[in-house]
Length: 57
Image 1 (cartoon, rainbow, N blue to C red):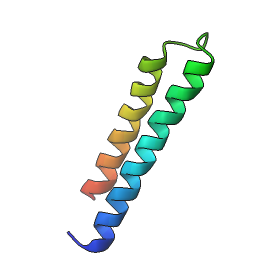
Image 2: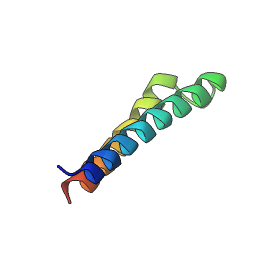
Image 3: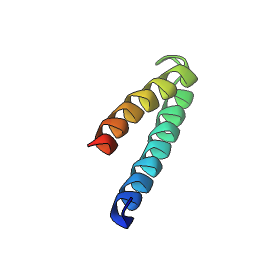
Image 4: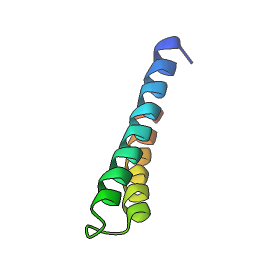
């Protein structure tokens, strides 16, 4: 694995953490939107699928 590939994987991982935290924060502040943990985990699952597709190419 080259250094560039490792940096891209690290960036995608950090973006996933930011996505998880952002979704969790927004839904926690506005609980009427839906259950906080469910929404955050669904967003991260979609992101993880996209990251998997990108990294396998």
